[in-house]
Image (cartoon, rainbow, N blue to C red; front, side):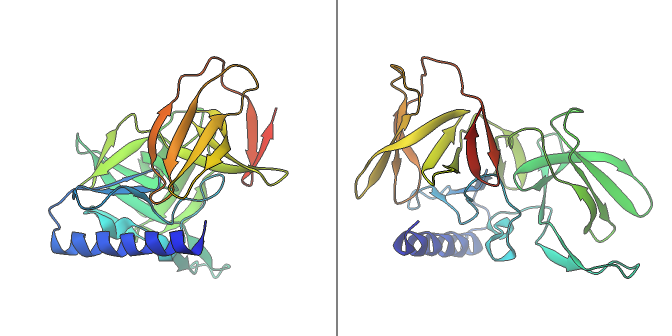
Length: 249
């Protein structure tokens, strides 16, 4: 990412935040690290929360919870255990509600539901089902005191609208690198390599060596897919991603 692109995105973030402060009744959306304003004057853009590789814990300086109304949001906080243990950082948690009123927690793009309550804490479990063991426990101050944030699946797709959580068919691009350093894009489980670049766009083509014509074009300014053919003539490849590095299996 060039410094000019970073500056442009920072300017867009400030513009969106300023617009939200002046128009708090407007809808603001956050879905898998992308931000979009309902204003026709602002295009969708990728926030600084977009990381290379697997989802990371969100640094406090880039938490976007202030971009939308929500029941309660907290940022990363340094916690000193009452037992005198080593201080640690409580991961950023976003608290939202589904349309039916049930509360959800979002950590690193993954969603959690209330799985148990005691007098002093609440346990939150991944919404994907029993096969995923990711969970965390918060105390009465909404600080994470215990957690297992390793998931057996990719983050879900969703939209936050005025603090409400809606499931949708939004597709997101995951950026990884091969061991040789070359960048790949992963979209809906398929892998793409950089096939062409201009001042305004980049073209990504399916990595399959066969006759597959799948590709997409992304705007360099807002990192948004503007056109593409996502119909593949083959099955999804199998691979492993470790620390942001892509390994084909």
